[in-house]
Picture (cartoon, rainbow, N blue to C red):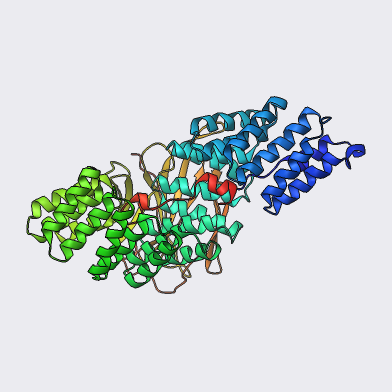
Length: 555
């Protein structure tokens, strides 16, 4: 979401017809047009000329100051922007937009709690201010207050349902809360609203990677790159997806492009070095790790991945030396524990290897290399699964594993459905429905996904997972009920149209077939109710998502 000047509309309200052609009005209008064309310096000059009129009333002067502050912010001059916003507040303290704008700049410079106060003030003055809800949600995200962020993004969406930035923000919040299907849904809504919104393509790609949809992720990263061809981070992320898909050659090309665009940052060399090592081009890998260490001598990841490369070259002593260096830099380096575990495994020290690999996953649950290493040792990775009491129904049960709930059925042993909780409470399966022709092989699993705060008190939330029984895959997840609001599902012409209980609409293209699902046919419906990714693979810090400041100011 971009920060836009508020003067043009309010100025017309405050300016009488007789004053419409005076010099300050003309300068302010010209400045607004220049700002819209991204001629920031020209806009600042024109706003300054408009402010030279000593006869301006306080309200008008405050509006022009606010707009000049926006221009300063777009020029990456936060001090000048905040100075203008402060002066505007002194002249016109009831102007909600100036608090919202100052909050955005404060958020961009890391003063999160001060920004929160400004967004709160803006919403007191203007309770229907969608942008302020969206921006306050961004502040909640910075403070890791994910549920509060989702609530604020949801309010922003209810006020302006055609705003792709709010859907993208909520998708980011869902992804941070390990709800990739909910994230995918919101990112998809964003790109439906604006097919050129690259941040939504990027977000959806990252969510697809979280559910191992690497090919689809590559497609979305490519769409984002089409709009941001010089964004090095996008090439890093797409390269990661290629690497996960087993295409090291394409990964190396993308990492090389990232290095060309940002040659003085170490992470590109670490990424390419890892890809070279995967492709068994060990000398190229070692050259890249050496360059990464030269650029950032305190990078534990560079030492850890070089250690793994030495292990591949059957030089465990050199590898262990690099592991020690990585752990001295960061005792909680998941990559270092993984690399040491791999070296122990290669030398036949299985118990020590398993301990290190489990330690790596305890530090970073998304480190897939550690999961794969444990699998090669015949060990199940991650937390122990525990069945949630009274959460299942005939044939279905719900397991709690680490930070996730997963539903499984004895009738469909290859199908796993992530149960994404949107609110407080325990999950509970409520209904299972297998469709008949022409949608045979499609199932709908309805489940309780928690209790959230609504405008009139707590609201029960139910979701549905639409699954393809032949592909053993979740096709989508939707809100079936929220409080008294129910979704409407229309099955027609090869697709499922959904008017969700959260007030939005979606459409899923479904595979149609006359062939029944291969599993023994269950009863059509079990009625009743029983009560009770970080990417990249070398760790989360390689990924720098667009900040709210980036979205606001278009960087």
